[in-house]
Image 1 (cartoon, rainbow, N blue to C red):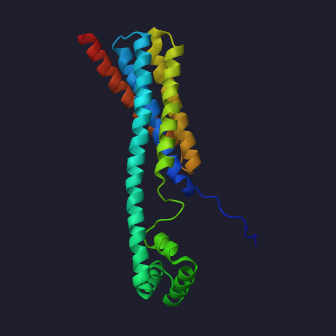
Image 2 (cartoon, rainbow, N blue to C red; image 1 turned 60 degrees about the horizontal axis):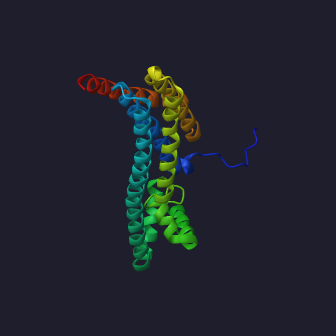
Image 3 (cartoon, rainbow, N blue to C red; image 1 turned 180 degrees about the vertical axis):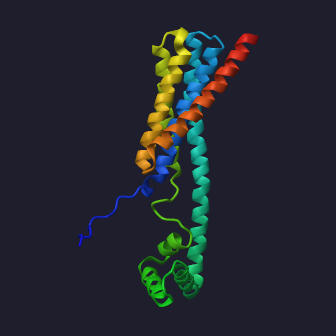
Length: 233
């Protein structure tokens, strides 16, 4: 008979908040900046014009990501706080009804009613609000909203991602700028997909292919638009 491991299992759910913001920021930084550079380069701009467009895209994109993440996650956080405040009032006004409600949640999950009430009672005595927030509302410290963390993470990772195509266009011959930026960005996207999948415990190949295909599509579309407008001008 095999011994049962006494160590805690290693899970990935605690990474959801910062991992989502980090992946979104880095992915958007690479895709949007590379697409902008490729589009401008396809319109036959000189290197300085391409770099100005790229740097402007980095700054604007990072600020946009920070603002968007902060507003979005703040809205979620406001909703969570409102629900918790509502639950706090319910616990003050009708503690017995709330206790039975918690017990019925455990019954619905397959726990026998007597045991469910014992569990609900013990959890309520320990921390009634935390028990209801977690099991009734699905809000816990692990998955709770953190607006500032999301905003800073998104802006920082966007900037890091955007540096890849910018460095590529600086180092590449101007005549091969589109090709070099495209290849470097696609490789970066594939690595990003693999790393984020590994950090989140998901399949590496599927994640890498998914993010690379979307990046390639974005760059192809902007290159086409840049070529079209360059020819017209």
